[in-house]
Amino acid sequence: MSEVTKLSNGVQRASTFPLDASQPISEKDAQSVKRETQLSDARAQSTTMEVVPTQVGYDRWAEFYDSEDNPLVLLEGKHIGPLFGDVAGLTVADIGCGTGRHALRLAAAGARVTAVDFSTAMLERACSKPGAEAIAFVRHDLAKPFPLRSAAFDRVFCCLVLDHIGELNNFFLELRRLCQPKGRVIISVMHPAMSLQGVQARFIDPASGRRISPASHAHQMSDYLMAAVRAGLSLEHVSEHAADAALTAQSPRAVKYLGWPMLLLLKLAPSYV
Image (tube, rainbow, N blue to C red; front, side):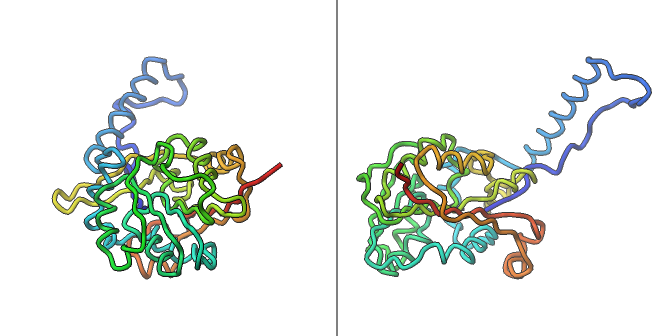
């Protein structure tokens, strides 16, 4: 359920006085530089981005989420297929299902799907689509334990969600709890390298023209991997995917990320010592 943008164009003004490299900067001057930098950056962000609570953001995004130019969703669609495998007859949980792009595909392939999301508007969009009647949709706060039975699912999907989860350790424990002993957990997430460019999920509000960002967290790759390890999940697959010429041909917004890692994919299995 997840797209990206720059938070700021950089520091516009570092100081209002000349700096002489031959003389040390006083602590007072250094603090002045810091304050000017912070204020300049804050002004730049305030004119370009409105950060809202995650659920509020996705409720507002739902109406046009599927029709937007979203390079991250396109890149995920290109690479995640082999991790799905044959799901016919399997029980599947889609955690953070959004407007149902994976839940509907999995159900059409013969899986028995339970799809969970915290956005009422996203779920309403998912429920309105053909094939939705075969899916059990559940509205639930993803930061809390899921109202689903333990070890009930052959596959647990969590796609373009993790950067909106603050407490990763408990979240990964919940993903493992849902997974059958011989099941698999499959994850896609915006690559942590994107945060080095100051980017996070966002959309353009058609009414105001403002860029809106559902609140997110700048996790590192080690945060994801160690949360998996602590939850008792072993790594079967990890891959990183960058924007390429084929993606930019589909998505004009991908041009500025050409060659930069955008997507991280993981396939995990419950481990037993």
